[in-house]
Structures are given as C-alpha cells and as structure tokens.
Length: 258
Image (cartoon, rainbow, N blue to C red; front, side, top):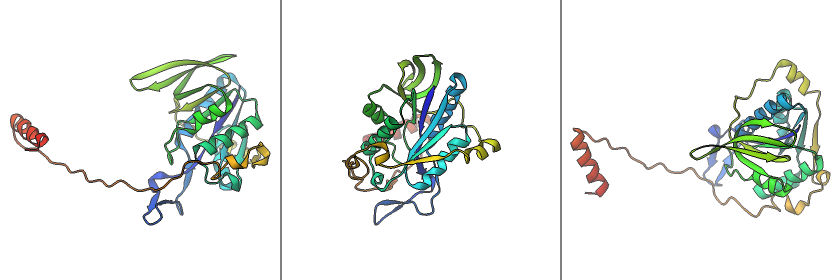
C-alpha cells in the first residue's frame, strides 16, 4: 500500500490574537503546531500500514520552517517527506492550495490511499481534501473515523454522519478526509526521532511539480479575506426564581415580551 498523508502547519489557535487595525491574525510569537485533524489522518495511515505493509509519504505546503512538522511525521514512522515551498505558493486560498497539492501528487505518483484531516483549525473550510480529489479525478470519502477493511482493490471505511455512522466501500486510488482516528496519535520513540534526521526532506517548487504559477498562491486565488474579527458576546443570563408553576409563567412572559 502506497499512502500519502497531507499535513499543514497551523498557529496554535488558543494563543492567536487579532490585530484590531489591520484585521489580521497576529502570528508573531505564536507557536506553530501540526493541524490536529491531520495528526489523526497520520495515525490512521500508520494503522493501515501496520495491516497492509507498504510505505507512508508526508507532504506539506508552506514556509521552510514547515519542515518541522514533516520531521515529526518521519519520527512517528513515515518513510518519506516532501515540502512544497516557493514564493509563488504564498497567499493561496483553498482552490490554489488544492491545485498545487494535486500537481505535486501527480508528479510523485503511484499513491493508492491519500489521507487529509477533515479541515484545518485556522481556516475551517474542509474544502482542500475534496478539491484535491476533484483535481485528481479520484473518489473521496469525507468524515472518516476508522478503516474497517483493506483488500487488494478496495477499502471499507466508517464515516460519521449527522445521526450515526455510515459504512462506505471505495476502490483505489481514493482520498479520505479524517475526523478522528480510532487512537490518539502515538508518541515518537527516541529511535524514531534519531532516524527521522537521516531521511531527507525534499523541497519542491513550481517548476519541480510542473505547475502553472498563475494558478498558484495569491495569483490563483479567486477568494480574499476581507476582514477578521472576534464576535462580540452580548448574551445575558437571567435566573428565574419561584416554584415550578411560577417559573413557567415568568418564562412564558419573557418569551412573549410581556
């Protein structure tokens, strides 16, 4: 089984603040982490490989410092790593990002199973995975929680739906977006951490993946973020005292605006 896991480096959203004048995120001094749902995708990949054998490749697009999360993936057991980093990739929306990732995947080639986190915590769009599948012309199964069966030509997965779960069978190659792996992401061993530094992280630019630069980065992004702001919390809590009947009557009066 040849597995690809796409990771994204994101700011720790619990520590991000908003610049009130520029309406942008203040990232200075904010630590970067691997997107948590991408960690679940990697955990699922490791579980599948333990059953089927094969290899896992991790891929990300970002600044040179994004190599750090790829090293984390290698320390956990990934076999190879690729970093898409180029000034033409900067400022990409989901369409430009998915195009760039799909071109890299085509260039690397030969993947049976592609795994993405359902969404990134800094954007929450849940669009990139399905858009990559669209560019590649392969099936996509979203909201995957677990893999139930793997065979030579098919994979059977469990996916979350609003009122329960659904079992889906798909042929390879297929792209899955993962909600949460069955287990929490394992902790890297000392041996794995040491080994990770012996594996090269290959850096790829626009020409390396045969991409059209006009479809990458800000140039290839039809959407723009006009404003970012924190919602104002104006809700008030009112406690109703009295017996059950009195509370019910007072509640009805409040609802009716009496």
